[in-house]
Amino acid sequence: MGVWALGTKKQIQNFIWEIEQLKDKYYNIVGSDGVFDGLDRATSEAKIIIKEAEEGCSEDREGIHQWVKVEDDGTTECYFCSLRSTNSEIK
Image 1 (cartoon, rainbow, N blue to C red):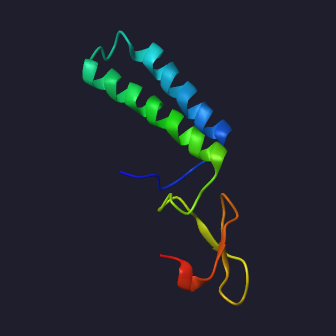
Image 2: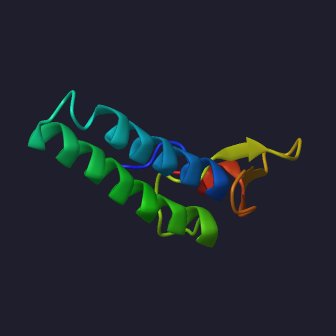
């Protein structure tokens, strides 16, 4: 598994809040350990992703960079952390 999209810290906090609201709303309707364990895992993973959103990307976090072309010579920049690279350096 990996992170294929990374929103803002606020967006991720909203996701966590909405999951918590779902848990409250459906507790007596879908009372299943499997369902609630899955929701708990979703919020736990989102809390990890918030840390990545706060820290930004780094070269050792393969798959998180979102490359955007910024120069006509092929130079690209990561949308999240502003790391710059030429096309030949992108894996």
